[in-house]
Image 1 (spheres, rainbow, N blue to C red):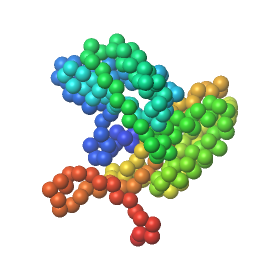
Image 2: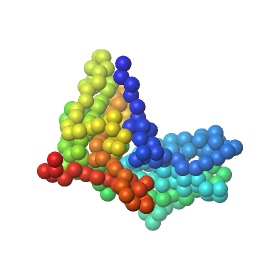
Image 3: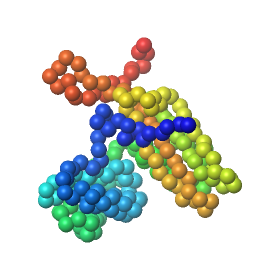
Image 4: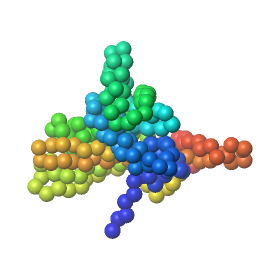
Length: 228
């Protein structure tokens, strides 16, 4: 039997970090449920904003929510009106002051979550799933990734029995800890049922600098063309 692990969780503390950053001795359960409620609300409210990641950083008197999006204009709204409305609505989930920050994703083709959402939208729009997968794979490779794997599972093409189908090109070393693997998943809601979409992107290896006082700093190292 295959033993599957989330590539992001597997690399926490190595070359990935937590999306919720805070510490609590007494109110851990309360803070955790607040984070879940905030994430669920924002993902539903900003569905058209192509949100990739939501970071939550807690301080004693405030909560910072960092929204990583490919379409910041939709999230911010005209003259920041949308952000103000969202901040007021988020206030009902916590008794602390909430501050929203927007980070733009300039190359969506290098973000696995956005790619999986794109495939899910195409499947919901009745585009053939193989065409959507191959087109997205080509965009990722053109953007400069070293490897990409895309998988879809469900009643593909309206089949009676669900099945799993995947495409892979290049290297995707999931067992290598130093490998910078970007992983994202999304769900397409069709008339036949739900279809799960998963995307893995391999962007290169991350090594530590040797022989320096700041040896703990991680740096990205890519293979150049023609290198052995």
